[in-house]
Image (cartoon, rainbow, N blue to C red; front, top):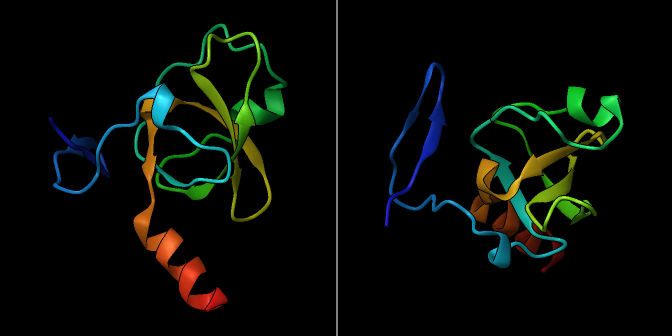
Amino acid sequence: MWTEKYRPGKLDYVVGHEKMREVDVEIGMKVSIVDIKPAFGYMVSAKHLKARRMGDTGIVRGMVQGHGGEVFAVQHNDGSIAVYRHDEFVRDEEMEQAVITKGS
C-alpha cells in the first residue's frame, strides 16, 4: 500500500493519505484534492472542468453518470463544483474532524 500527498511541483509519499478506489467513495465524504490528471473525454460543462484545482478541499456531492463510476462531482468550500476521478482525491480526516467538533 502506498500513499501520496501533494507538494508543489511533485507528488510526495506521506503516511495517512491513501489513494481512493471508486468503491470507497461515499456521497457526503469530505475530500482533499491531491492530484490533477488530464480530463479529456469528460462529458461535463466546461465550468466544472475549469473549477478543478490542486490542494483544495470539498465534499463529494455525487457520481457523474456515463463515466463508469470513476468520476465524481466535488463541491469546494467556496461553493464551486468541479469533477474529479476517484484517484485525484483522498479522504480529508482533518476536515471531517472539524465538522464533528463544530457540531458537537
